Length: 149
Image (cartoon, rainbow, N blue to C red; front, side, top):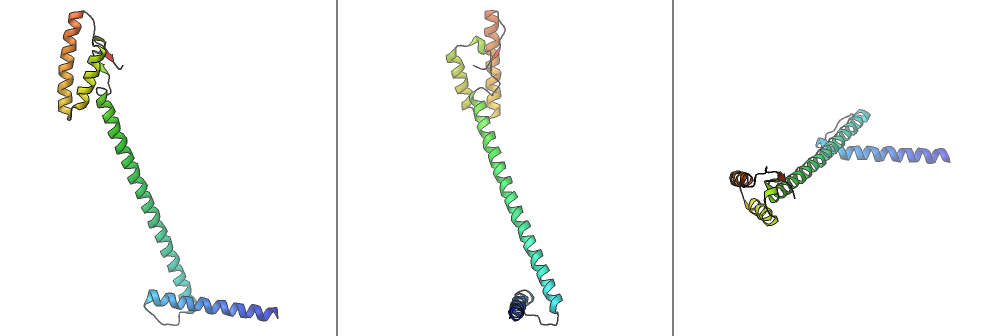
């Protein structure tokens, strides 16, 4: 009884495998017919496995590309935020002659510097400010220092 059940189950499995192979061949090979038998089924399974591997590789590539794009966007956003922070603090280098300025003057300096749009405007503003602080330092007889307060 057991051997009959086993043989029946084995026969069913082989038939199901053969019909699945035939359907797959019809889809891939345009309904090719031939006496490939076991070799044809093995080749087809190998092709399907290769196709699945290629699809997995493409999927992994898409994920990696997406991660690269997200990293690039995050870095760009951080760079912009850092640039804005530097602009609002006078270029991130502190204020030349800050020891010669009042708190109000330093705040005004930061606001004006932060409002400038181009590097040329900022460089011009810094040059004028430097000359002004050097004159003030000479008048007071002290050296101008860079402050970050």
